Length: 67
Image (cartoon, rainbow, N blue to C red; front, side, top):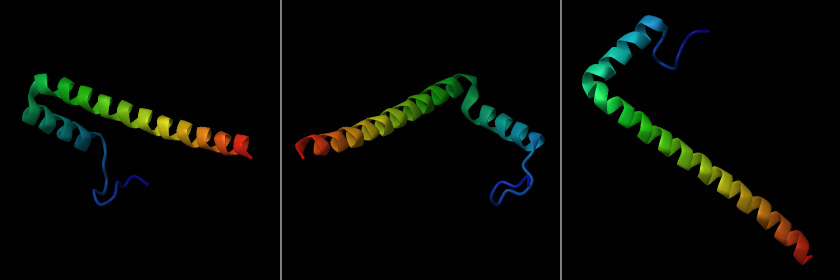
């Protein structure tokens, strides 16, 4: 199935048109800055998830030691 939510058929021509529209809106200089910001956000999100997982694992081992 080649449907993407409500967009219907979403193929290569549509992706190219969207990419060209983004290039026209933001320009060639702003796109790398935008991608850099998105990359930092994703990295921060992953670090936060890993920190929470470590806290949960640490809390589980702490309760076992107290008993």
